[in-house]
Length: 269
Ligand SMILES: NC(=O)c1ccc[n+]([C@@H]2O[C@H](COP(=O)([O-])OP(=O)(O)OC[C@H]3O[C@@H](n4cnc5c(N)ncnc54)[C@H](OP(=O)(O)O)[C@@H]3O)[C@@H](O)[C@H]2O)c1
Image (spheres, rainbow, N blue to C red):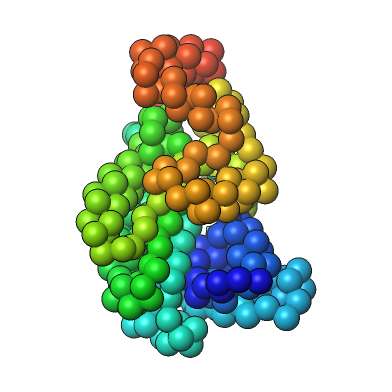
């Protein structure tokens, strides 16, 4: 075990955030999980202690979009004795027709996925600078690279997060802080289980054109990406091929999407 880091994972009580804690703990890192629900956090930390015995898992109940995030983060960092790696995985998804989503859906999605990440990073920066090897990893989505039916709120938040991450990378580089962003396609998680209960048929059809991964594949890609250090991490070979197509042949990508949506179309009425 070499080079243990002090790691804070937002959205650490579930899905990708929780799954990422396992290899980090196995390599000897000290990990603190941050999320809103203290019960889910305690259960998650218990699971991790069983999976990786003898490891140091902390929990912090806080809302990345709430007024207390900076003071809460300071408290968690003090308990770890510093912060080397911040992984921003906290996020929500509201899927639906633009006519059906509410102002609150848009506001909450942007508040958590974008502003929550921005505020967490700003609160963490003094600690990451003090570390001397500060590192930020933002979990965006393939929905930051292409528009998906039903994701007008979600894509807005993830495109914003990708743009923020690009600019932040340039600003942090001279200060020795590494910034990376992950754009996974859909993977199995509680977020997707909930989505499956309510998603529009058009979203179902459109997302079927983007190969789904299991969470383990995403975790492996993130861990490999952390070591390699490239800015953009796109898990899955098929996803990388697809994003190449989106970037270089956008018209063809939209044609494929439109064709799948047309076959499933019901509309908002
Ligand atoms: N699953 C996918 O297919 C997929 C694909 C691409 C990208 N992503 C992104 O990957 C990340 C993780 O997604 P997931 O599927 O693992 O989701 P998940 O299982 O629903 O986990 C989301 C986590 O975020 C926490 N959270 C939500 N709102 C929060 C807030 N305001 N403050 C602090 N914590 C908050 C949740 O706990 P509490 O509710 O207790 O706060 C939970 O721990 C998200 O950013 C998501 O957008 C997911």
